[in-house]
Image 1 (tube, one colour):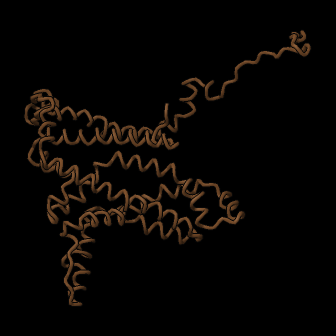
Image 2 (cartoon, rainbow, N blue to C red; image 1 turned 90 degrees about the vertical axis):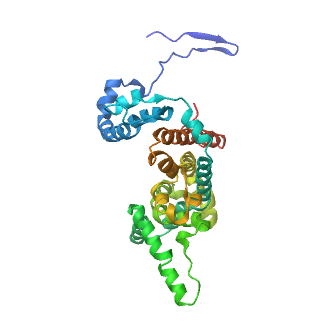
Length: 337
């Protein structure tokens, strides 16, 4: 073996460093075929979800072309011929939408409900997760968690019926008030309190289900952080402020971005079931507008244009909220390139 070459420097002579080959990680060395053989069980489990997205999301997305047509489903012998033979009117449906005051009223109502629920509904699952995580008994924790998220599996018809039996004009609270000589309130037909009604319904139905994500995030926090802070004399509130909330912050930001992207989608069943009771002015959201002004009167192009408008606005909100998250040092739903 030959000796390493000698390099002269100002301080003398020393052996030159041997060249080393660039090391690469095992993941980079694997070929596509090797990764496929290694990960085929995971890919196989993703197939049902991919088929679900393909059949119910990506293929129906081709129907957005209706937004630019005076669509007539009877123009041909089948759906494909109806697309081909329907008259192309460009942005005519959008022009009709933007000149219709009822459309903008539904948009304002939808955004108002979204903003209200961001303040009074979005924090509830976080608080429930923190409270439930503080319960030491595993059995009691499992019991409370099961009871709290059970209403998620109820249909909106059942939820509205339960609230009607409690808060309606012939409900339990109204009957009790009349028996006591008081005026019987009817919260189910009051347009002034409708936003409080639907928010309370959403909290009762879905807050328990939403806290599951935050419970998973709490389980990922290192318990040694709590032990070290307790040893340093930090109380319960300081541990929650400096450990629990920072641990939940990435999940909170992620769900907040997704909720902002879904700002124009506050639900359909909940509102259509109660629209006639409180009136169109209080309960006409964008989804019910699409139904009554598009589908019910067979203006398919107008309904498709409203749906496409909702999708574009949601995309812009997601991108904007994600950029704001990047400015605050959070990853968001996708990282910066």
